[in-house]
Length: 363
Length: 238
Ligand SMILES: Nc1ncnc2c1ncn2[C@@H]1O[C@H](COP(=O)(O)OP(=O)(O)OP(=O)(O)O)[C@@H](O)[C@H]1O
Ligand SMILES: [Mg+2]
Image (cartoon, rainbow over all chains, first blue to last red; front, side):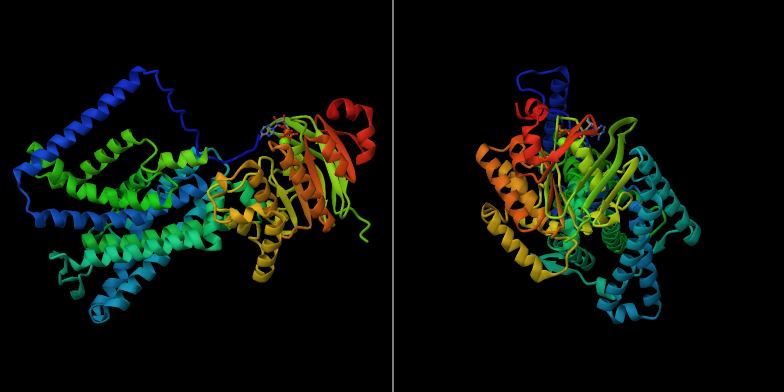
């Protein structure tokens, strides 16, 4: 009778005691996966190919790239929470931030200012990227998604894919198809010692800034009036309206916030991989979307944890799981591993790591 | 005194898809009164309230609130002009705490001092909520949820309150408490439009009452008058 906008219906849990053919198959699949993974991990560790230093490097890199995924995943999850829309253009919004950061860094670098004023230079890169990405996200919502707000779900989804191509091709048109390399200022050179291991300064910078951004975002979402309104809208649009909340403004705010965090992530991604390219948003976009699903889409802390989990897995798993099988050059298979792992985890927990807890609280 | 009614609904028609649910409803609510609307399941009571508060658009007809036509006004602006709607089934923000729900009720306000005073006052009206203040509201009992829903609506300092079946699913003691509270709020000057299944209690506290059948008003009169009406006695007081 009441027109709630709950998540799409989830299938009822199967009644205990009645075991169907598909249940058996899916359990066999799960057991096979676990056994295979364990076997290869054990054999890889027994082979003793990697030193403890190398394992540490892999984990540190995983946390770095994972915190970038986490930031991107936050954009997906917040927009989904408020609008039940998967913003497939979010990867491109990240790419735009990366470009913006690149142009700021390159122009500062050409005068030598980037080396002389590390903090100011870094802050300028982030600030411009944040504004550009947040701005593009807001415009995308205003002109591409809002007209479809009350249309069937497929319409905005297709539109999102269209926007994604539009952004890619515009950047390609403006800035060409070539790779451009991010400036590499001196202050990112010296490694930092952590627990006696050497870690590249970029990684320390990225992880610590990402933590600051995530804490800030958490505070915005949980402690401010607008953040609380965001959570209210994501639970019940109609009742939020009855409170006098202007839903359009909350949606704009959500896109601005998600886009800004995505832009920052774009700069980090550029600093880690040292290059920008018009197509660079696609892979981290898809992976971060996976991370958001892993954390239970719509769940803000879930997106953070999902991103970091995915980053560590894709960094460590090739060595841990594939070397055991004697597969050559396992690190080239990073993306394959990331996506297989995502699928595997979702077989175990179809609604993500936190999805079920969320569902139970709802019901 | 204001002579004009604060809320006036005239010849309202509403349909979902093709099916007409309200067929020419007219009703008016005077300043400071309690008007009760009773009717069978599916008669269109909730639909009428949703239309008044703007989350549904009428197909035809007019709604004036405090002298202004609001039929075309966006719902959030209707709320801001002082009409608070406590929807059927409470509809709290279940993942938000009691405190946060109340804050959302006061969303449109900026007078910090006034908000704090009103919250303090409402925690005196609903003392149970003080103990539950930091609790996630989805874990409250039905009665407590109804208190939060009413307190949340009052936090906006409305000029008028729409209540959709506030006693639904509550224990007899809780039902009495809810009706007592409605009377108390009204005594402080609040105008109330009350939709109820519990016809006898609702008619007792009503200044005026309407009966809605199949999307049209079939009877109206003072609360006492309708309680004595044989048709009402048979159909709703049985
Ligand atoms: N979102 C909707 N879509 C289609 N039909 C609806 C919708 N909401 C209500 N209806 C129909 O409109 C009619 C009136 O519903 P409404 O909720 O207004 O009744 P009600 O008088 O509040 O009933 P109850 O006492 O059970 O709450 C019902 O026949 C119902 O099936
Ligand atoms: Mg109803």
